[in-house]
Image (cartoon, rainbow, N blue to C red):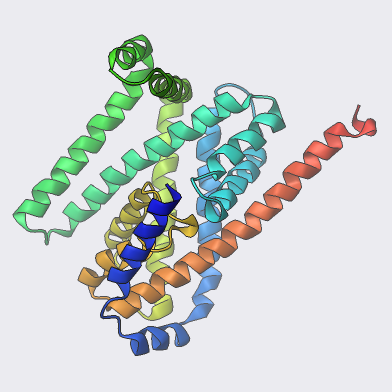
Length: 320
């Protein structure tokens, strides 16, 4: 998998950098209006906090967990995803929060998996709706976007109904002609996912989760609209959401830490039809990635310190 990720990154970087006007690229980087960071960094931090609140909606179905504990664990997870391969941060955030509150890593990991799957479905719907709202698509692309939106809505309905059909899913998996170790692994992951999804069987909890998902992508969309002004460019909110949806869905592709190659290729592909030159699109996504790394590193390291401090105080003689 590592070799595949490296080959993919190199291939996508080749196509991204081919025919790049390096002079324009470096001029764009040097002339950036970096004072705008004072607006984008707080918005990015707000987006991560809303994500933590959203995750807590699933976790708190099992036990009352302080929002800040969920936030610190979530940021440790994003820190792991930024610097470690194979999205190891998902395991990190589940392990930290599971041990912190005695919920059990398996349940917390189930909620984390459910959150990621629901987020991917939401991105499909958001991206399709944002594309359709532009009104400038060819008939073929418009039909494809409508199919994406319908598929996303149907997938969401299927996901919400899935916990009621666990026995059926496990029976189907058992009958598929696969090696026993593979089918057992698939069955285990399916059961884990369904455990997390049961948290949303409450209508109230589901509505809160959906509302927070909308808030997450609204904050990120506004951050992107403001962020592109660093390179003296502009995007409408719907265009920013198309970019975010493409970047979010591309993160599911096996890639190197930081999505090197993948994000650059996606950003150039999406932004050039919106009037960006190749150099401007590449400059923007690199600036955005560096800023995101700084935000994630700051909050992630602070989260590690806070969670370790909390664990140490519980284990000290004074606390016993």
